[in-house]
Image (cartoon, rainbow, N blue to C red; front, side):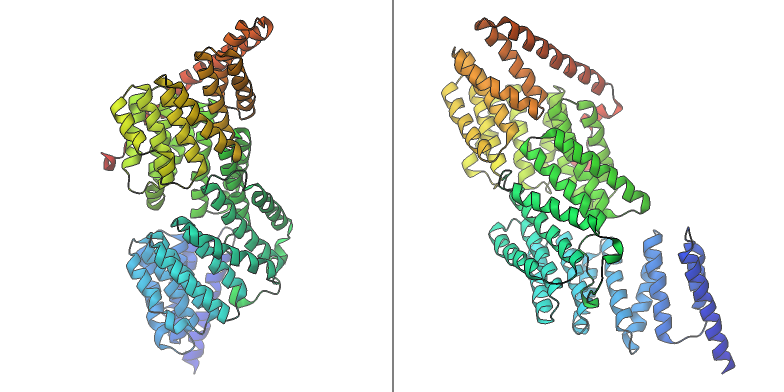
Length: 580
């Protein structure tokens, strides 16, 4: 009896010390691990030994890069907990962590099988069964097995409904909606999101969690509209989303989980990350609508928030948010004529992308497309062509990116008078048969067809295409496409000798371009306006726009010089060895 008591005393002392090292500020995880390892030398009950191995595996996974040691302890916890009574929760947690380790070691098949083999046993445990189903769906989604992922989420929704876990059912449905959107199964998205939206409204649980569900639902609604290029239609959803995030940030943290069912303790995203996400979707909307100043303002706010969060602790999602923001702000800078910042942000995005294998696979095509667009803006057309063609060759490039990249490549071919390549490419960019559902990309395709017709002096065809662009752009408030189309129509009327109609096009184009602001359209518009005002004898206005034209031109020249002197400028010739 004395020996048993001595063992218990020794074990408790070591565990107490381990906890003290773990919770002190700053934590001393090395000493904590040493205490836990020492406790394994003390003879204890197998359940306690299993729990200790689980603690060790957990700490080694989260605080070190030694996945092998973490895996070893988790496998021991898993083995011990299978045969010991009342160890189900240790078993489920070790399975969940082991699956994460296997997945991180690029052995997703083993991760999936580990979870699948546990699902029968986890059925009576609502929390753990739901958690394992979420995790299994996520691993399938990471492997781009979206059909399997959405099926698992459907199973989860039915299970949660039958178990009375109504909050968790909504989470399963929203996750399924997101998966269907990623998989482009758009006809199936609406009924799933519609049901989820109704259930969110009628769910009478914790207010903070209900508001978080609303944010999830509205983010999906906004993204669904933006994917379709419906910039105007999305405004009511975006406004509701911004109101919801304000409500969430107004809650005190101690009110977060009052009266929450322990079986439903799932948070789809931390509150601080939700704030960044709402900034991000606002940036996406501003970009498509053509409000570059607004996109820039929200990007800066979001990046500042990310830096604050990273100072507290790293999270893979923050890298994804930062990468998306940098990619979009780089495009903004190009429109605004700030190529110096655009290339710096593109290279920063590239470095983040190459720090994570999964981010690299997903974002590499867009990085090459951005380098191509930057090279276009610097009149480096050979480098632009090489980068854009590389983006198109990468299998992971999504449909929308392929269309956007192809449209830019068409402009490069047009500028370089590469008629055969241009005609081959334009044959694949017929707006009526475009593989994308995006209205903005279809409108952009009409614009490129109009630009090509203009260069060939087929003015009637050009006007016909540009009117299609304007019809679509005005219908969805696509301001940049509207301004580009108006100034090109103005140039066509000017070249045709119809100065009055040219003025009617160029004046609103200039007003809209100033609002965006788009320095390239402003430069183009002022070039036309100075000649038009001269024809109409309005010399005061002619002098005014001539001065503006000189200012825009000098700004672009200075920026061109500054950008070309940057070390990052050499990245226009950068290619991954796997691209060659």
